[in-house]
Image (cartoon, rainbow, N blue to C red; front, side, top):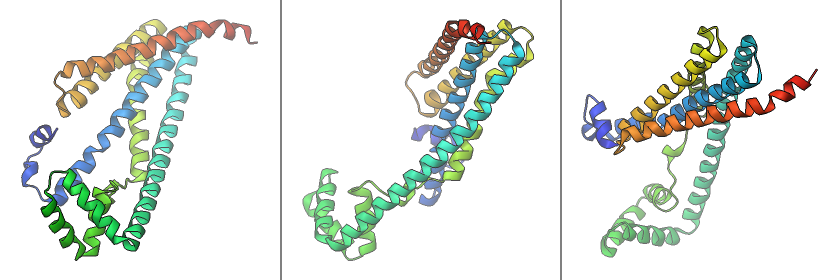
Length: 254
């Protein structure tokens, strides 16, 4: 992945300052939310269109239901991302406070644990001892290193709940529009459904190919795209079958 990042930067990543490198990796961490939101939006809307096309004959009803599903899905995904990031941040902060209290109350345990961890990572016992002794002369450095090495915690683990919520909501909305627009542009339900599914499959293949295949340097980029394609077609086909199965229930309701 580092090679792909270097190619995408005007300045090689290796010559950037550590703070700049950190900001780049923090922005790239949002790729997960974007891909997840777009994929969920595309699949959810395509599934709704396919399911309703099998259960409802009215084109206007299908479009209105899909729009309602899109709005509800975007709000739900945004709220879920906000609450999830906020809860995760609070848990991490609590664990960091607990770890710091333990480090202050029992510094010798932290020193010994850090010594063992450094040795596990390949540093000799003697060198590890020297590093721990040097860190012990600066308690703040010792605590910060222990939080990362022993507990796997760091200040950089904190996310931004509002930013994550907005990003996820808009990503879902953008994905939902992809199959909905071609369906709305065609007057025939069958033709609109075919266009929506074709667009869905093409876009998801492109997302898998570009993000996982190229950015993450997958050995076979096309396979990543095909995986997204199979998921899209499978979800839409299942939704259509479910719609056909429940269509008699719609006719029975007055």
